[in-house]
Length: 212
Image 1: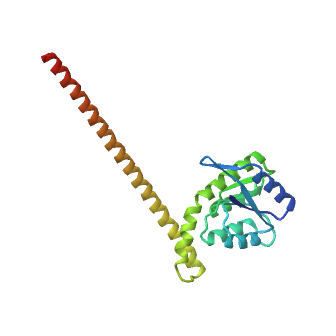
Image 2 (image 1 turned 90 degrees about the vertical axis):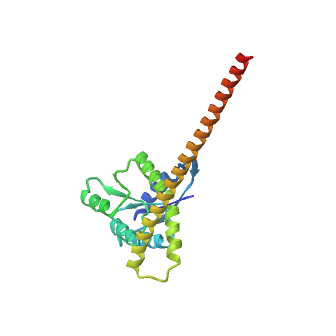
């Protein structure tokens, strides 16, 4: 099950976004996943949900009361969380788009929304978030072993742990690739040696027949 948080202060927009997000299953590595949607009416409500729940992706409007989408993204990044966040923006709103990119948003879509593009971006963001689950879960395990920390120190450690885990995974993948290559070379050498022995045996038999 993939978890999507959608944030908008208009209920009819939430209805449309939820319908598009859930009408098709998301295919990841050959496996189809259903999408479960959680709704929030503003950035503050969404931020409270993010602090206590896991989401594979977030789809949010920018202009909302109480807390807008940009402040929501800034607060999420302040927690050290890298959940993919897609913004819905008014056409030509370059100022907000630039700030959103600087804050690390996953993508942004202009209104009026092209539903096919919306569906495609949601699916890609969910897949990206799904692949990041293992890393985020490992970060939480490591943080749980520490005493209570100030918010800023907590955020810094999340970033440090994420970098460490990514390096560890890269090294493990490199080691696996080297081991697989070594095994393949060894097998090839063995098969080549076996083939050579068979050829030598065949030549010996022919010589014996000629001598006879």
